[in-house]
Length: 184
Image (cartoon, rainbow, N blue to C red):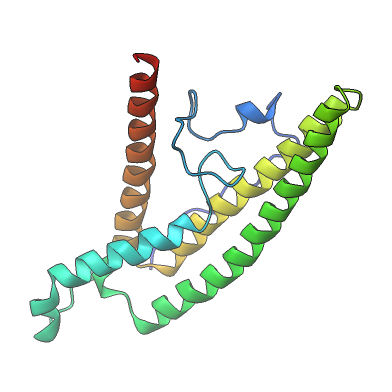
C-alpha cells in the first residue's frame, strides 16, 4: 500500500503576527465558516465527511455489493477501517473538547481585559489565542492525515478530493453570503 507523505512538522514559532493570519485558507474568512477557534473548521468535521461519502458511495453500489463485487472506493471500507476511524473519532473529540475549553478560558480572559478598559497585556492575550488556533489547526491537519493513512490509495484520493470540495464549497457559500450582506 502506498502511504501519503508524513504531515509537515508544526513550526515552533509560526510566521504569523496575529491570530487573524493563522488561517489555512487565504483571504477573509466567510461569515458562515464552521469554527472552533480554527479558521479551517472543527477537526471532527472530517468524520462527518468520511461517513457521508462512505454512505453515499455504498448506496450507489448496493447492487454490486450484494453480488459480491468489490469497488475499492470509499463505499467499500472494511470493518477494520471503520473501527479505526471510529477510534480516531473518539480520540479527536477528546482533543477538540480540550481545545474548546482552552478557547472558552481565553474568551473569559479577553472579556475581563475589555471590561478593564484594555488595562492588561494585550500581546499576551493575542499570544494565547494564537496558541489555541495553532493547536486546533494542527489537530485538524493531523486528523486528515491519520484518516488518509487508514485508507487504500484510491480511498485516500477520494477522501482528500471530498475534503477539498467541502472546504471550497463552504468558503464560496460564505463569500457569497458576505457579498449579499454588503450589497444590502
